[in-house]
Structures are given as structure tokens and as C-alpha cells.
Length: 236
Image 1 (cartoon, rainbow, N blue to C red):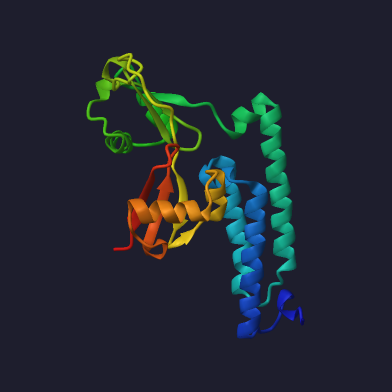
Image 2: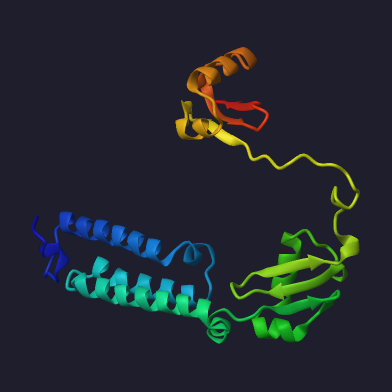
């Protein structure tokens, strides 16, 4: 295949622009895989810098035919290597960890707002109140501790006397946690999940026919628990 689209050109055809976009997409997918889920789920300082840099670098050859893709991909590759070095260094040296991911600091302590903490986090009081509302906390005095985390989120810990009672507090017996397994999705049996339950296709069909009297193709979602109880949700 002609690789001219990869190099700088005076002009590109629609197919060449499309090929650039496809290669960039899979290249960024590969880069994200190397960087790991951490950079996707938690946008910390280092992740934010990487996201801005990579987005800016890859955008130019996707919008300017006079620029080749090789330079951008090499630059991104170097940045990813540096990123991984920083991440592994932060795992090994505590001082470096504190530089990359600073320790959390209080915004509320024993029901009192720490104004210095708000200033350090560079957030107005309205943001703190908004986060309290999201956590359904109406009274600041109920908060024993609120910490500003390094990823820009706020962790709230209620005073023990305002925390909800648990079965353990009331000395009640509870059943072991059981996470339901999805065995049917979009009218099709998930045989990998069904195998984990120790059941087979014939058992499943008989069970659904006897208990629910429906066809598998009409089931949107079906789950099974440790007691072999099947819950189904039909197409509406």
C-alpha cells in the first residue's frame, strides 16, 4: 500500500485523510493501553499534562497535510516512556511520590471549614458546598473530616454519631455477599459466564421454561445468584 499519506504532502485525498485518522486512533489506543487504566480513571497532575501534550501533538498531522505523522508518533512515544519512568519512580521513592501525587490536606475538620485548605486547593466555598450536596450532607458540622485528594476530588468522613448503623453494629447475622452472574444478554446465552456456574445450556433452558415460561430470545438480561435463582428482564 502506498504510504505517501504518512509523510508530509502538498495535499491529501479523502482516503489518505481517512487512513491518517485510522492509524492515529489505533496508535492512541495502543498508547492508552501502555499507560494503563490509572490515567483514564484518575486524571492526576501527571496524567493531565500527558493528556494535553498527546492531544496537541497528534492533532497537528490530523489537520495539516504539510506535516508528516512520523515525528508526532516518535514524540508521543518518548513522552509515554518518560511517563512510565515517572510512574515507576513514584512507586519506588516516597519523596518523588509526594512530588507527583501530593498528600491530601483537610478542607473540613471536626465540623469547621479550614479556609487555608480552600486557598491551597484553589477552590471557592461554593465548590465545597456543591460537593457536600452531591454526597447528601446537609450540615457541615456532621463532617468529621473532608480531605482534598491529589486527583482533585474531595473525600468526606462523617462524625461517627451521624453515620448509619450497620448490621454489625446491631449484632445482626448477615448472609455472605453474592454477586449475580449475567448469563443471558440481548437474547443470547453467555456460555463463558454460564460455565462458571457449573450449569449447561439444557439446564438453563429448562429452568427458564418452568419458572418464567419465556423464550431466551425474548430476554433482555438474565442473572443467576449462588442459590441458582434466575432474575430476568424482558424486552419492553
